[in-house]
Each structure stands twice: as structure tokens, then as C-alpha cells.
Length: 236
View 1 (cartoon, rainbow, N blue to C red):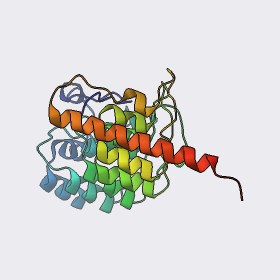
View 2: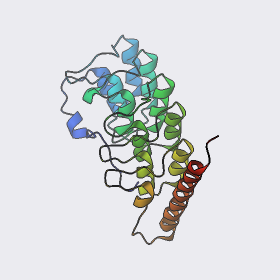
View 3: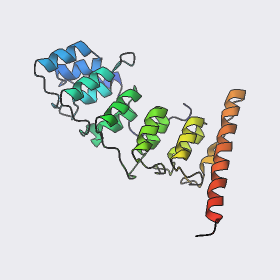
């Protein structure tokens, strides 16, 4: 994805390996060892235990070391064993946000957390919103799920960019369509005064890429015109 930006730092494997206080369950979760996770849980391993920095087995499962190993069954096993989908992780972030900001994030894990009761912010806070994070780094399904439960579409990040700005910047046509469907404002300006339409630019000569940017421009122009027409209608 072009222009990818994450609001939270991703922790690389070399940094994770320096954690001396990971429990066997945490290590198994981090390494994608589902069999060991089941065995340790069966033997009474505490899914709520934390390291000195605050990591839990759930955190380690979400922040997986090996992108080739599916961490969804491990996250599911931990939640079934009593891990809290709303536990506060390191950096004072929720498990949901961790799932949206990790280097090897798994959209299926994010969807599982939502189904398991993870609280989705229904108001804007500091930094990029969960909708913006999903727009930048997760799947269409995650984006739709967040918007579908009421996550606001027009939250502005540190520099005023909304999720629609990020989708437009990368000519992500499907994401632009979804965001507009859920009320994203095509005329909202960032801190430099740019609307989403203003950032739809590329120097890539590839005809397919050019077509995506043209389609994005068409969608935003049509949405802005529709909004302007609605504002011009006389009040009833």
C-alpha cells in the first residue's frame, strides 16, 4: 500500500528476543506454537499473567514473530481460556489497536477480537483512529466491521488526515467507496488545507495505477457534488 503510515511503533523480532521474563505460554503464543499453547493452558497456565513491561500471552499472540504462522487459532484459544479482549496492553493501547498496528497484523484476529467483545471507540481521540488504522493497514472486512458498529469515519489524525485522506492518497477505490458509504466527508481538510481529492496524485505511469487514481477522483468529485446539492436544498 502506498504511503503506509502506522501511528504506533512496530516491535521487531530482535527486540522481542530481549524479553527475559516471557512465560512459557507467552513464548509459545509469540512463536505460533498452537500445540504448546493448548498444553500449557490445560496445565493451568495463567492467561492473565504479565511481564514487567505489561505484555500478556494475548499481546504476544497478536504481535506474532513469524508472519507465516497463523496466529488466529492461538488468539482464539487464549480468549476461550479467559483472556480479555479488552485488556490494556503495553503503550496503554487496547488489544484491538495492537492488532491494527503490528508489523505482522492479521485482519482475521481483529475481526475475532471485535466478535469477542473488544470495545470499538465511538468517538475521536488523539492520533489516528481505528478507522484510519484499518484503512492504512488492514482489510476491507475490518474497515466495514469497525464502521458497522459505529466507529466514526471523520476523525482527524495528528496532521488532520482522515481515513478518507489515506484511502485517497493510495487510490484505494474500495476503501474510498466504503468510507463514503459510511459518511466520510469528501470536503474535510487536513492541517495543510487539503481535501481528500487534493491528495489523489501519482507519478506512476502504469495505466492500471492511473485508472485507480482516476476512479478515486471520480468518486470524490461525485460525493462532494452530492453533499453540495444536499446543502443547497431548501429546509422543510
